[in-house]
Length: 327
Image (cartoon, rainbow, N blue to C red):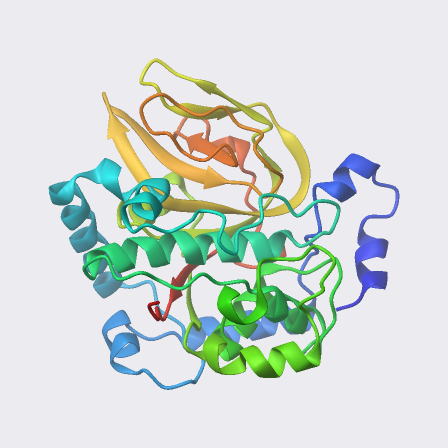
C-alpha cells in the first residue's frame, strides 16, 4: 500500500479530517485475504495448544463464548475494578509510558495504535489471570510498516485493519526492549532493526479473532473478559462528560476514517453498562471519579454506542490476543 492510495482517498478532505485519520478502505485482494483468514480460524483450545511460529486465528464459536464467560466470572470474583488497565499497570509495578505513545500526531498510523492498545489491554488482563506475570511492552511499528509495504519496510501513512492483523499474526509484535518506544518519525523502522527484533516479535504474535457482529453486546462480552479489539469507524467521541455514576462517558462526534480500540475493561453500575474506548490523539477526555481511566479515552454505553460508526470497509474488527512472553 502506498501514499498515492492514501492521498487519493483523502483528496478534497479538510486538514482536520486527514490529521485524525490514516485509515483506508480494503481493496479486493485484502478482502480476499481477510476471508481466507476467517476461514482458517480454529477453536481457542487448539490455538493455545499450538505454540509454533505460524500465524493463527481464533474462531468466534460456542467454545470461545464459554471462555469469555469463564474469565468474566473470574474477574467478577476477584474484584472487577482491579482489572481496569491502569490498575493492573500500577499493581504490577509497570510504567504506563513504557513503549507507549499518547498521540499519533499528524501521521496516519491509527491502525498501529488501535492494534497496539488492544494487544496491551488484553495482555495485561491475561497476565493478571496467570498470576501477575509481567507482560513485555510491545511497539508494533515495524509490523505496521511491513503491512503497509506488502512485506517490505514502508513507513508512512495509510493502512486498514486487514494487513495489520495478518502481519501481526505472521511476524508478531516487536518488543520495546528491542526497538525502543514508538517514534512518529519512524526512526526505529528499518531493515536492520527488523532483523534484530524478529525473534522477540515472534514470541508476541497476535492471534486475531474477527468479530461476528458490531453490536455493543459483542464488545461488552469481550471487555468483560478483559479483552480488547481494534476497530475501524467513520465517527468517534469528540469529548466526554462525567455522569452521575462517576464514569467518563463519550459525547459529541468527530468525523473521519479512524482506527481505535474498544474493550479491555467493562463494568455495570446501577443498571448502566459501560465499555472502555481509547483513542490515539492525546489526553482529550475527562477522567471519571470512580474508574480513573487514562485521559486518552472514555467509556461508552448502549445509549452512546452510535458515536462509533464502525465500518467493515476498513477491515473487520478483531480482538487482539497476544502470545504473552513475560519480563
